[in-house]
Length: 161
Image (cartoon, rainbow, N blue to C red; front, side):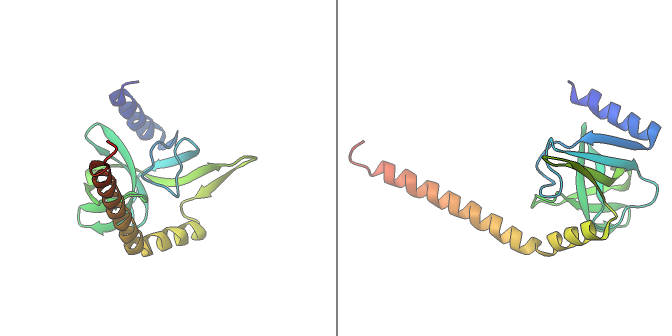
Protein backbone atom coordinates (compact mmCIF):
# COMPACT_ATOMS: atom_id res chain seq x y z
CA UNK A 1 0.00 0.00 0.00
CA UNK A 2 1.18 3.51 -0.77
CA UNK A 3 2.76 5.21 2.30
CA UNK A 4 1.13 8.53 1.38
CA UNK A 5 -2.35 6.97 1.53
CA UNK A 6 -1.58 5.31 4.88
CA UNK A 7 -0.18 8.57 6.31
CA UNK A 8 -3.22 10.55 5.16
CA UNK A 9 -5.60 7.92 6.57
CA UNK A 10 -3.84 7.89 9.94
CA UNK A 11 -3.91 11.68 10.17
CA UNK A 12 -7.60 11.79 9.21
CA UNK A 13 -8.51 9.10 11.74
CA UNK A 14 -6.66 10.91 14.51
CA UNK A 15 -8.28 14.23 13.58
CA UNK A 16 -11.81 12.75 13.35
CA UNK A 17 -11.80 10.36 16.30
CA UNK A 18 -9.18 11.91 18.63
CA UNK A 19 -7.73 8.41 19.10
CA UNK A 20 -5.79 6.04 16.93
CA UNK A 21 -4.79 2.42 17.50
CA UNK A 22 -2.28 0.74 15.24
CA UNK A 23 0.37 -1.96 15.26
CA UNK A 24 3.78 -0.48 15.77
CA UNK A 25 6.34 -0.99 12.99
CA UNK A 26 10.10 -0.51 13.33
CA UNK A 27 12.82 -1.04 15.91
CA UNK A 28 13.51 2.55 16.94
CA UNK A 29 11.40 2.31 20.10
CA UNK A 30 12.81 -0.94 21.49
CA UNK A 31 12.76 -2.11 24.25
CA UNK A 32 9.46 -0.40 25.09
CA UNK A 33 7.59 -1.01 21.83
CA UNK A 34 8.04 -4.17 19.77
CA UNK A 35 7.47 -4.32 16.03
CA UNK A 36 4.36 -6.22 14.98
CA UNK A 37 3.58 -7.28 18.55
CA UNK A 38 2.50 -4.13 20.34
CA UNK A 39 -0.62 -2.15 19.59
CA UNK A 40 -0.08 1.56 20.29
CA UNK A 41 -2.82 3.95 21.34
CA UNK A 42 -2.23 7.56 20.32
CA UNK A 43 -4.46 10.51 21.18
CA UNK A 44 -4.61 13.86 19.47
CA UNK A 45 -2.53 16.44 21.29
CA UNK A 46 -4.61 18.62 23.62
CA UNK A 47 -1.89 20.13 25.79
CA UNK A 48 1.79 20.61 25.05
CA UNK A 49 3.67 17.32 25.50
CA UNK A 50 6.30 17.04 28.23
CA UNK A 51 9.71 15.43 28.50
CA UNK A 52 9.70 11.66 27.96
CA UNK A 53 6.29 11.64 26.23
CA UNK A 54 6.32 9.56 23.04
CA UNK A 55 4.83 11.61 20.21
CA UNK A 56 3.65 10.85 16.70
CA UNK A 57 4.94 13.40 14.22
CA UNK A 58 5.31 13.97 10.50
CA UNK A 59 8.58 14.23 8.58
CA UNK A 60 7.84 14.63 4.89
CA UNK A 61 5.45 11.80 4.02
CA UNK A 62 6.47 9.62 6.96
CA UNK A 63 4.91 9.37 10.39
CA UNK A 64 7.31 8.62 13.24
CA UNK A 65 6.75 7.77 16.90
CA UNK A 66 9.71 8.85 19.07
CA UNK A 67 10.27 10.19 22.57
CA UNK A 68 10.76 13.83 23.60
CA UNK A 69 14.07 14.28 25.39
CA UNK A 70 14.05 18.08 25.58
CA UNK A 71 11.24 20.65 25.44
CA UNK A 72 12.17 23.98 23.84
CA UNK A 73 10.26 27.10 22.78
CA UNK A 74 8.29 26.11 19.67
CA UNK A 75 10.14 22.81 19.18
CA UNK A 76 11.32 19.59 20.75
CA UNK A 77 14.44 17.44 20.69
CA UNK A 78 13.36 13.87 20.04
CA UNK A 79 15.05 10.47 19.93
CA UNK A 80 13.86 6.90 19.43
CA UNK A 81 14.40 4.70 22.49
CA UNK A 82 16.74 2.47 20.47
CA UNK A 83 18.50 5.30 18.61
CA UNK A 84 21.57 7.45 19.09
CA UNK A 85 20.72 10.36 16.78
CA UNK A 86 18.58 13.26 17.95
CA UNK A 87 15.98 15.02 15.84
CA UNK A 88 14.52 18.49 16.14
CA UNK A 89 10.78 18.74 15.57
CA UNK A 90 8.58 21.83 15.47
CA UNK A 91 5.29 22.03 17.36
CA UNK A 92 3.32 22.05 14.10
CA UNK A 93 4.76 18.65 13.08
CA UNK A 94 3.25 16.88 16.10
CA UNK A 95 0.06 14.92 15.51
CA UNK A 96 -0.51 12.86 18.64
CA UNK A 97 0.89 11.55 21.89
CA UNK A 98 1.19 7.92 23.02
CA UNK A 99 -1.26 7.32 25.87
CA UNK A 100 -0.99 3.53 26.17
CA UNK A 101 0.07 0.37 24.41
CA UNK A 102 -1.17 -3.19 24.42
CA UNK A 103 1.59 -5.70 25.09
CA UNK A 104 0.74 -9.10 23.65
CA UNK A 105 2.18 -12.15 25.34
CA UNK A 106 1.99 -15.88 24.71
CA UNK A 107 -1.06 -16.41 26.86
CA UNK A 108 -2.61 -12.97 27.37
CA UNK A 109 -2.40 -9.27 26.57
CA UNK A 110 -2.19 -6.33 28.92
CA UNK A 111 -2.61 -2.60 28.46
CA UNK A 112 0.18 -0.38 29.76
CA UNK A 113 -0.65 3.26 30.38
CA UNK A 114 1.98 5.79 29.36
CA UNK A 115 1.09 7.70 32.54
CA UNK A 116 1.72 4.79 34.91
CA UNK A 117 4.43 5.51 37.46
CA UNK A 118 6.29 2.26 36.73
CA UNK A 119 6.39 2.94 32.99
CA UNK A 120 7.56 6.55 33.56
CA UNK A 121 10.25 5.30 35.97
CA UNK A 122 11.50 2.73 33.43
CA UNK A 123 11.69 5.42 30.73
CA UNK A 124 13.52 7.76 33.13
CA UNK A 125 16.07 5.03 33.96
CA UNK A 126 16.47 4.11 30.27
CA UNK A 127 17.35 7.70 29.41
CA UNK A 128 19.49 8.03 32.54
CA UNK A 129 21.78 5.27 31.28
CA UNK A 130 21.90 6.74 27.77
CA UNK A 131 25.61 7.68 28.03
CA UNK A 132 26.46 4.05 28.79
CA UNK A 133 24.30 2.80 25.93
CA UNK A 134 25.94 5.32 23.60
CA UNK A 135 29.45 4.19 24.59
CA UNK A 136 28.48 0.53 24.24
CA UNK A 137 27.10 1.03 20.73
CA UNK A 138 30.13 3.05 19.63
CA UNK A 139 32.55 0.44 21.06
CA UNK A 140 30.61 -2.36 19.37
CA UNK A 141 30.68 -0.57 16.03
CA UNK A 142 34.41 0.09 16.38
CA UNK A 143 35.10 -3.54 17.33
CA UNK A 144 33.11 -4.73 14.31
CA UNK A 145 35.04 -2.46 11.95
CA UNK A 146 38.34 -3.63 13.43
CA UNK A 147 37.30 -7.29 13.10
CA UNK A 148 36.34 -6.83 9.43
CA UNK A 149 39.64 -5.08 8.70
CA UNK A 150 41.63 -7.90 10.35
CA UNK A 151 39.69 -10.53 8.38
CA UNK A 152 40.36 -8.70 5.09
CA UNK A 153 44.05 -8.43 5.93
CA UNK A 154 44.24 -12.12 6.88
CA UNK A 155 42.52 -13.14 3.62
CA UNK A 156 44.86 -10.91 1.63
CA UNK A 157 47.96 -12.47 3.22
CA UNK A 158 46.66 -16.05 2.99
CA UNK A 159 49.10 -18.00 0.72
CA UNK A 160 46.41 -20.60 -0.07
CA UNK A 161 44.52 -18.06 -2.14
